[in-house]
Length: 348
Image (cartoon, rainbow, N blue to C red; front, side):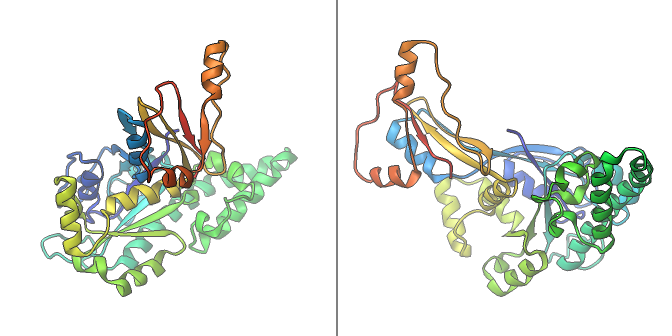
């Protein structure tokens, strides 16, 4: 299952620096608009402490976590919905993403210019959301008259016309379609799907902050209020870039020195996975401990029934249990299972 999160933001907010740390890849990170032209794609592992425990118990040769695909998309500017800057390219790239991660500048640095001349997270969020809303309105204005004409002849498209008209009314009020709840569990998602509307996608927000703001609860509560009920993540992109260059022990020491428990990148990968509506089930054995990705609400698939008696017997020995059960058992030493036995955790 391959779903992607598009990383968007105004120019010079730290998107590419964050992306470098997220994927440990070097992409162009420059202090001028449109440093990123073609989107950079990175596959990021979702942290899961259970996998390391399983690998230890089963003597696994490999650990394979679930992954999230992040796409670093060109910086957006006012007028992007009209094709300003790299607007058309931006819109095309973001339409291919399944969720949108907005990177918001909250750090202060006189050496890094802000396209609007001031640091204001609230204004930046409004700028990006406005461009996405305007792009969706343009899409609707192109297709709605045709749908309305066709509905006079084809009565079966009446529900689609109603869904598009409802979406238009929400957008004209300055709301995103996802935050208004028009696409979740209403049947409208399928009706609107072929329009590829940008604001039907779930959002998450990353605030690129000064180091001292990482532990400023009042400041973080203020920013969370701007984007609620969407998830807000706080990190310092330069700190994350430094952490990416250190080994685990050194990275933990650096985090402790600034009063943070885990890297922002780990939080982002986990929150991004959740925002995409995904969950995992785990399997383990001597070859590998692996997290498999499925949609929330789905159940872990059973092993296929084999045509050979030997394989059927091996399959019947597979065990399934909730992770809390094996976590308790793992506290006491036990021999590793024999190679042909497999273990599977229930979905979490």
